[in-house]
Structure formats: structure tokens, C-alpha cells
Length: 119
Image (cartoon, rainbow, N blue to C red; front, top):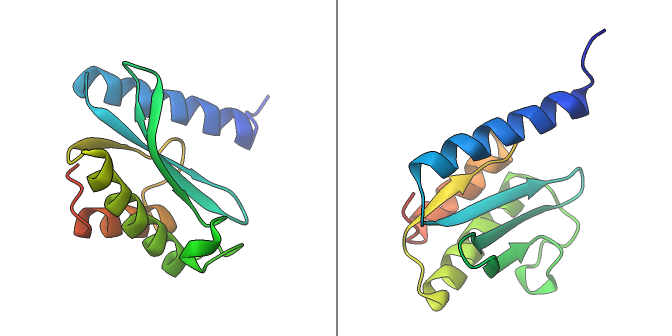
């Protein structure tokens, strides 16, 4: 029996996250979630179990409410980079989850790098 798309996604997400945890122990994680209508990102300290900063297209202040395109992802990436500086985070590792590093996810990562985050 063939695996469903959801099952394959969950397997890919766990595989990516476990490989990243081995290499980047002690660093803050930049976690991305993409839905059909929105994209969101969080800076998570896994040691303390705390979210340090977050940004999403659901925020009215970014001006991209309900949009899920490359431009909106770039604005979210720039916003998380700015909020990371305020939280005192410069170094993190990029957790793309089960999403491919292409399109919106790549645009978000590039904007965060341009904003000063190192990963």
C-alpha cells in the first residue's frame, strides 16, 4: 500500500529535524510552517523550551494578511530577522520541517539572511 502525502511529510519532517539536532546542539532553531493561506516562522530555544520570537502573515503590521506568496514570505523573513536582533539572537539553524527548500521557504530564508541572521 502506498504511503499518503501526510505520512511522507511527517517522515520527512522528523528526518530533517533529527539530523539538524545532531549537528546544531545548543543553538536556536528557526522553524518554518507553511499552509495554503499563510506562512509563519518561530525562533525556538529547545534547551529551555521557549519561543524567543515569531512572525506570520497573520499579523496586520506586516501588511500581508492572508497572503501566501514569495513577497509575503520575504516580508516575514525580514520581520523575524529584526525581532531576532531585539531578542539578542544572531546565530541559529534553519529548520524547514517537511517543506522543500524552494519558493516561499527559500524566499523567507534569504530575507532572514539579508536581515542579519546567520545560518
